[in-house]
Image (cartoon, rainbow, N blue to C red; front, side, top):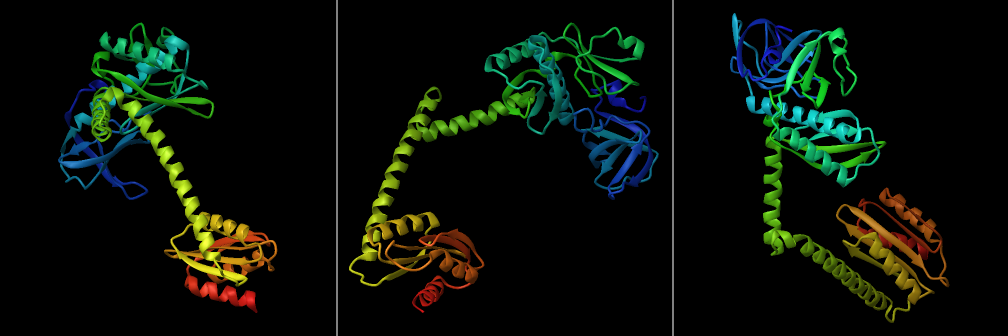
Length: 395
């Protein structure tokens, strides 16, 4: 443990060490091993530290077979001494988030006996999974309130190494995953937890905690939250969005929900009106296509019409002329779509006809003898497909 300087002092920002070795792992990544290090390796839900060794960027840190590997952007020159510099902003953020997770998990257990079964520290937010199936807003608010109370009380956060015998003195929040080198992170009269991560010396340095939301994940509830500086980042992000919406909606923040509700209602009314207009236009279009046309076969090629519109138009056509057959084809960029339909008094099998059309365009579709549709690649122009299907019908 002597080589792990982050356990001796979590606030250590720079250090010197001897270069033990450099090498490449199985995937070819270059790494260095030092006589001692303040770089925290990925573990216990906490991400690795970044920074530099003799000015060379540290990209990743892992503990592999008992040695801490610093993965580098380039090789270190062979020298007796290496100077390490920790990215302190990233390290302290991880300290805030990890301690905030301890406090939140302990608060859930303190108030409702809800146990945390997993933890993830992401780049922007954190999550814990609770061994419950539902969480109410009232419960979340009460837990958040208690967590922030503990933070504001600026209680000490104590780290302590214990053996199995000494461990009996503590009531732990969860079972340990190790039986040797046992390290406890303790918030007196609130939380005792086995943990190998880095933490500030007091809860006040976590600054604040905010639950952002939660969702059910199978038989668990996943709670998303942020701590410390990330609370300010979330506030700034949401404040910027609110300012933009205030301007766009021309409404003050407190009236924004009502403005959005009215806008959604207006949108529904507009969508309904547009749909009714489209229906009327399709009715006019169907009447125009039939017109005084005495032919039993009517076909058209359209540009940029989806298959739903073709289907509606085809149904209108056969309802107005039950003795005719209709071939409706649409060219949509590099695709061809079609609907073939016939009235009850017309002859032919539209499903069989569609099968022949699909073979020409490497397509897929289906239907029955009265109504069939499909689509595929634009291997031939729509006009050519129309003529070839007409020839099959008239043959």
